[in-house]
Image (cartoon, rainbow, N blue to C red):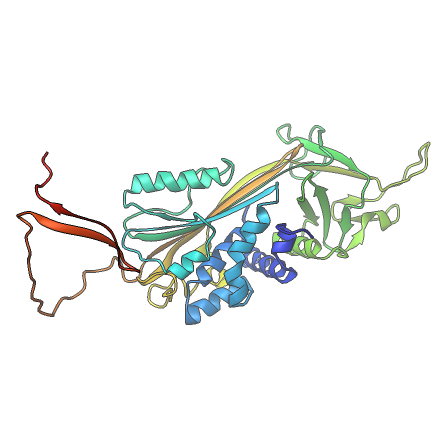
Length: 399
């Protein structure tokens, strides 16, 4: 393991925590999204947790799955790790409105140049945030998923992109012969042959590993007709985390079958020297716009999004809560490779609406001085008292 790699930056406990959040989120509902990134949410929850207090912090840390010290170190570790991963990029950023005073200690935990400003010009701010989303997803996502209005005091965002080419490219192979897409000329089958142990068969699902040229794999899982999407996803997540899940397809006897799998035998001229796995699949191009607050319990955002109970005093001087939490995610699988991107954003607003002017019940006596004749001046270095420049103003500047 070399310095600066993602393997070095994240511990096994970090990976387990991120994967646990992904599983909890995806399986929280009966219907699975067409595309989602738990990692994009996880990174943003960690940043949010570092600015939270008391019960809000506890809920967010439980969602992240790490203690406060590890969570605080996470943004920097992720930035360091993905910097050397050619197939992966991950950026995080925050934009604060003019009335928001961010805690300096909180901002130092963010990567360099990650803090920007909201000008209050909605059109200009939207253009800037959209440009950031596009730039950090290689153009795959062109808009920031949250809405900007006068109530938006702070925006936190993460942008993830993944791109890889297959080690073994697929070939186009006409239409499918079975299933709901059978004989539809618009559906083109992708086919490939592998001479590696890349297919595992379980009781209710079979899982294929498609390897990319970089350090990225894409796993595909198929179940029986009566197995729910959530059950198939649960098996896929289990297979991804456990190399011993199910049975290797090459260990099954001829005549056996599994979900989407048939084991056949043939007689050829030369002896078999490696696994022979024939794959037929389809390409896909999917996009999902997700409202994360609909899954606030699974993602640890219940208190953070409560306009009465949220506690973010370590994030900003003004009381804020998460008013919006959204993600746009897209993924494309074709004959040559895979690419995906996700932009996750939290829009934070003032608790109780826009801040009001404070009461001013105390009397003050104001002195006034006017420099309407020649005067002297000096400038000094405040910490040391060192005078830097001094002079006399005999005449004012003239237009």
